[in-house]
Image (cartoon, rainbow, N blue to C red; front, side, top):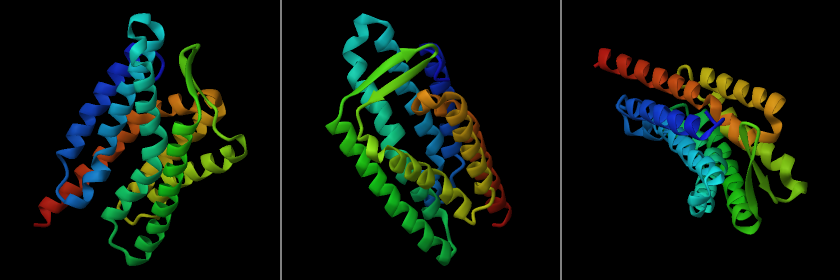
Length: 218
């Protein structure tokens, strides 16, 4: 995924299919946001497929702006609040709920910041090798702070949750980000989604196991 037009579309469809299967494992309304993460990953990949298509084919140039902003809104705006919200909705421990609400509040603030940036500064996608670089004119002075809070709100709630095995998802997401930062720093926004399929499979596993225990316990 993330390395060509074909890879993005194929990967997006595969992950979206995993997402549909995951949603079918939901047995409580509180699990719906968490279960929708793989489907969301898939749609994000498909959006970047259109970015690839627009950059490589002049006849599709009219789709470039829409596909670019569709991808970035999903990649930068949704994740900081979607992950803490998904975990918060499933959490039952009162102490952890308070902590997760704090992460959600920070995540919303990060999302609002990226919304401001997307509509206030230019963003230009450029193909570099087998990746897409999103040249963003965001404020340099806030870059490290915004990125740090983005990672904290997108990963830490998975370790705070008492839901069984969410910490494994947190480890996988942290590892995928670390690998991307070390080897593909320039392409971070695009390449991180390469791990979307693995993350989606873990989410499916968590919900399938929870559903099995729910059925056995009835």
